[in-house]
Amino acid sequence: MRVEVDRDRCRGAGQCTLYAPELFDQSEDDGMVVVLDDRPPPALHGKARLAARLCPNSVIRVVGDGPDEG
Amino acid sequence: MSVTSSGPPPVSLPRHRGCPFDPPGAYGALRERRKAARLAFPDGAAGWLLTGYEDVRELLADDRFSADRVRASSPVRAFPVREDDPRRLGSFIGMDPPEHTRYRRLLSRWFTVRRMRELLPRVEGIVTEHLDAMERTGPPADLVRAFAQPIPSLVICELLGVPYADRTAFQAWSATLFRIDEDEEKIFAARDAVWDYMRDLVAAKRRRPDGALLSRLVHDEETAGAFSDAELTGVGLLLLIAGHETTANMLALGTFALLCHPEQARLVRERPERAGDAVEELLRYLTIVQFGTVRVAREDVEVAGVRVRAGETVVASIAAANRDPARFPDPDGLDVTRDATEHIAFGHGIHQCLGQQLARMEMRTGYPALLRRFPTLRLAVPREEVPLRDDMLVYGVHRLPVTWEG
Image (cartoon, rainbow over all chains, first blue to last red; front, side, top):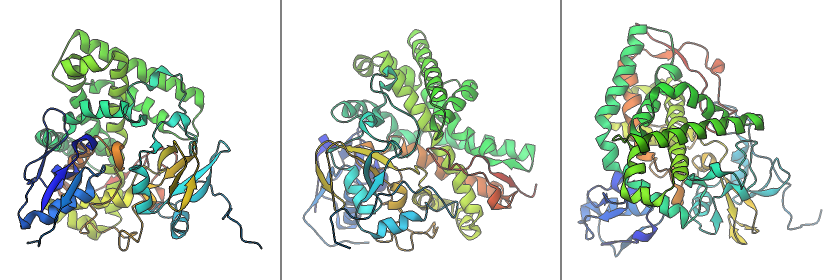
């Protein structure tokens, strides 16, 4: 699985950082998304998908698939 | 009767609630149509009402719709907006890109998950102080005045650098602005007064900087260069009023709901570590933005099974969407153990609440702390006697008389 973000669409709501803090953070400069891990291990695939679903501006795209763990 | 494309006659916005915690029952039947309903506005215009979860989410993420209320009809008589009013400056909730983008990019960093976590010890301290005061005074109490209103008020005042001592004045102006069917002259008077108050405060911050947010916005190179003092006045007002009217009503109405569902209250009391789930469920279940979110079509758009014409107003009922059985099983049940994370009580799209991480933190701290400090907390009046905020843009209770075994 690969995680991609379109930072131009981000408005810094923080849903990704709240629900998948292992994968996303918000920049100190503008509050917009920062990807911490764009190749998440299978154990975090579920969280990556949740962040993509919750994002109010469809900033996050999950490419490719893989088995979930945990 | 011949089949025509005109469909059912227009409806007016459902207003009558049966249960104090449920949206008006009429929304259920409208949602079952599985398409937008023709909506008759008080100003005589016709537009559309969206009630399904997927439809509402799609609309709020669609950049062919504008959030500028000057061009919109209002579903209730409240908060008139005039195009030439300089007091619209800085109110980014009613802006579209690229102007809206400029504001969010300069403000979002102050409301990140991390920054809000840094405020947690102070929020816990404020909650404890208010619980201590309730304990000292003893039962009964009005939970709105003793707990739900002062906590978010003090938090947002400290964050912005607004003197908490001034709260009586700006809370009264804010209440006038949020009351529906209010006299227009009173609304404009309140708006002038609250504008002048914040303008003077911004000017004071310019003369005497402090470390709080308003002063930082006035003095930090990036925001000082980007915003005029009038724009910062509008920003300050929006943050102050939004910080007041929302979390306060969630804390009071959420407590009311929990006291009427003792088993759910017990779960919150006994499992404070699961307070995050409880807060999301209360946000979904109660959705206090009761008259919906308003958008105007910039062009002809197909949405929710209908063709919306350019210039028509669409009301997206996030309260109805959060009760959509197609998205949330048993939607009318309060279940603090359910996964409600995909609720849209904070909105959706570019305008999704800037302060949502602050609101979450205040509620995650507030509900369990209250229920643990007063395990015998209960209503002091029959539930039918609790005065409901049917008459305000943001739903909740005007008062919540409670008692406990002291």
